[in-house]
Length: 295
Image 1 (cartoon, rainbow, N blue to C red):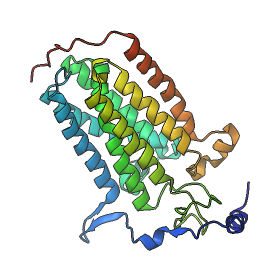
Image 2 (image 1 turned 180 degrees about the horizontal axis):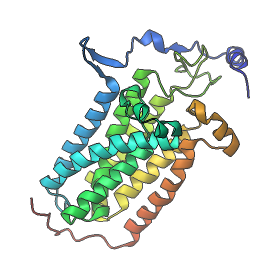
Image 3 (image 1 turned 120 degrees about the horizontal axis):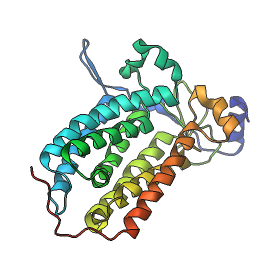
Image 4 (image 1 turned 180 degrees about the vertical axis):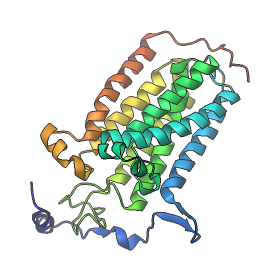
């Protein structure tokens, strides 16, 4: 592996573009600073994703065949928010920084960053399972509807990662014009992998999910939508991990295993997603005349 200085020299000799400077963009993690109280863009990203998902589900529920009523959406909004926050933090501790599990005072410091998508996903699935069980809902169909809303939150979250100047990409000698130098990552060009994730996991996957829901009969095939999201996210994340710098404490793990932690965590998602897609396609679609649950 090239040293940082050797990588920089290679980039220059390869005729790479002068890298962009993240610091020159004038970005700040803080959206609002009142002195006694601050609001960070990362917090607003979570809030925007959750609110967008809520209103999107409300709009989808008005279509024929919805498995949800308004009271179910309200419950999901509450429990899924808990699942995202608690699952995301505990997942980060379990998958990326186990020492947090032995130090509760550090574990609860959410404002310092450190959330895992896979942990948040587990928390959200548990929330959906709880609401489905309590409300007598079809779990798979409920997951179908919620999965359409997730990419919007991913888009906002990855944009916030970029604004924070965190989770930067790997060192590159690429001649592409958007290579960037991030504070704290050395004076060498890197991939802005946060934006790659926002594009693939958020925008592209979101457009695919919206197209399937609104322009096809996918919602009448239980499992097809959630399977498409799960497989699509896993493939996007697995690919982008080749451009994203592994967490510093997991560099050795990536070298030993040949894959980053993020890539290992996407492998079971690929299997599950493909299984749901096959399930949705081989079973007969639901009848269009299905009645929505009572409000």
